[in-house]
Image (cartoon, rainbow, N blue to C red; front, side):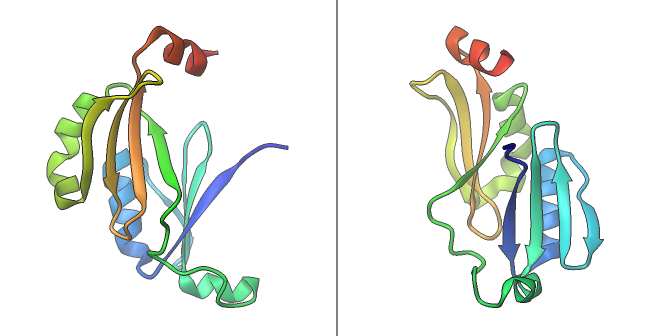
Length: 133
């Protein structure tokens, strides 16, 4: 088995696509006006509108109601990313870059739908070994 992607259901596809393109610097490939994918070497972030839920039988997910998951992106220098994104993140900042006990330096913020997003850089020897293995 291979984990492939995470899909966010949103009420405003264009807004969320613009946000993720801005913060990641990666273009989202739009397949329809209701579905696009941001592809990285590690996996894919899919962004889908609420109309796509009808293909799965209806009201199975609701945008903006995630209170458990954090979308995580490994970046080369989390402090530099924070400098680049401070204005774009604005009031959605949850935590400035902080070194966590497990060895990652982490920046936590919310996307326009309220989903938590973590940009992190491994900084301890153990964390760097874990991600470079």
